[in-house]
Image 1 (cartoon, one colour):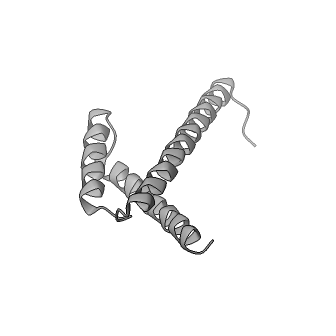
Image 2: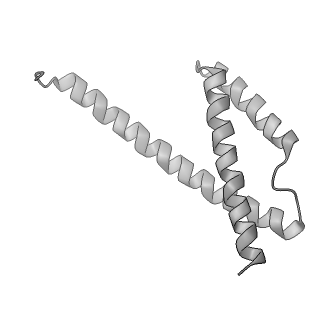
Length: 99
């Protein structure tokens, strides 16, 4: 068994704080996604907008590179996030059609 290291413990606590903040931001983003879905449904807008998806992936990849992150990894992250959001929007649409 390894001996506890105070610096390693402190750094892990710092990661925990970052992760909590990341989850808070994702929850905030999801709340906006729900509002966007409600608006799309109300105006009859397609749930999947290929141009918007491309714009998001391109911008986030650029932002990632500027931040010193791997653009491909960030594009994959946002692609997964967008796919999850569309699934949520589809579920909302189905609930509205079949209350």
